[in-house]
Image (cartoon, rainbow, N blue to C red; front, top):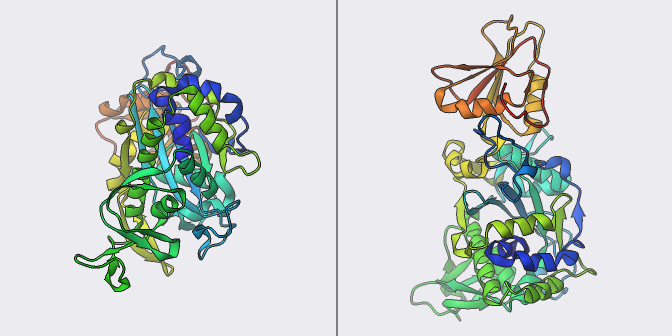
Length: 448
């Protein structure tokens, strides 16, 4: 996840030229074919509510797309010294996701935000018909399954995928000569080989840093206790994934600050760092098959004055639960909507659609699949109040006029737009009539 920061956030703090210089190195990073699972383009910042005649083609808005990146840390220790404490009580070939972070970059709003997704979040696994913790999705169906699971469950578009294993994490920390972190209390976790007795700002070496961001059951010294006495170490915090997510976010920001302090903005330094991190003999990072260095450079152009301190940090509202004997976290869906709104903003996923069948012989199942493939959020489907609807229509409230216009631009032929007093549980209702033919892959220039 931090290497992503060095490639994207460094661009955002003025390193676009430097990224151009390391283009050949970055182009050698292994790719994973997940293009069909990703939203094919970023969300044009003016797509939802674009005025008539305004193009929604992202190519006509270079560098202006709002993009969501899924950053994944893999619980995999391939290529690491067998004597490393990382190997304590773990399988070297594990493919569980140790951390999942959604990063939103919105040039138009001049905002960068990250949302941690707890690894114990209980979710429906995409295309499987059953649920499991989200950290199992990659092992079940590869990166594509993880992307689709997160995107479908949270209702957010995912445009790019970045994966890093433990070896890559260690290289990053070593490359910046350790990462200074504020340690409020002594912290210890023997299962990971973690022990930090000093408080205040402590520069963590690579092994210690990895244990620090991974620990889920840390201990600390009781007030007045002696660190040398094992009996004086007591539970630190409540031992849940949210505490760990917070440490991971704080560590990511601290690493980016450290990289800037080490002169990462200098193109020559950036080239050296890239060379250190991208080991051809033991690749530790994987990118999706659609991301380009050109996109990163464009982001750098958009964020030349951006500071690492401006990165916004979010967490999902969840509650503890036990399902099938497993300790899991359940999403508080109503409370989560305000958190997820920014990560959906400007995208088709932010438009919640109810589909109603208005013909005696029609079915809305195919329409639902087409809308979801393009990126809309279908929240409900059913029958209209009559089955002789000739022309497809979109019902909307005054407040949802922009969402209705956006949806109309994807429906062939162009539907009627009908303003109503209220719609519960959705932004718009699509009443499918006899004239309906298809959902377009890309929008018309106007709704009519």
